[in-house]
Length: 149
Image 1 (cartoon, rainbow, N blue to C red):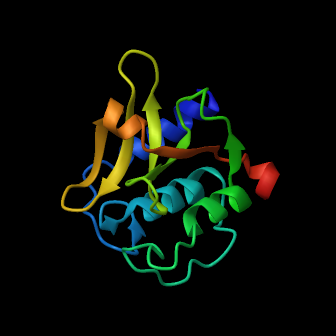
Image 2 (cartoon, rainbow, N blue to C red; image 1 turned 90 degrees about the vertical axis):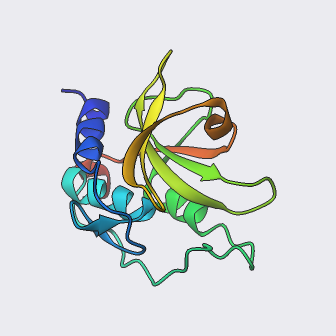
């Protein structure tokens, strides 16, 4: 199993986990950041930093790009033009707003899809439809254990 397949397999284990803001426990509750944190713990190791408390607006009033900055610090930035299974994708839900939703790309090609924790739905796998795809603000890869270990 290659790295992308490992990431996708772990992300899919989270499907059905209820949505719970600021949590990161498979089967019990998670939000979109918690999903990324949980997959990180299994495939990379201990989290590199403690996540401070955050609100559901993700610093929207201040315009702070907190998730983008964290992705740049802890994940490996990748070009938007070359999506790959296992990528972490960051979405900007409205033009001009902060990027504040995360998912893990599970399929590429004709039937692109991603796993994400979505308010009111829990962790689901959704098609990466045109409305979702045009909202992608950044793409990252998980580091290997040795790169952050």
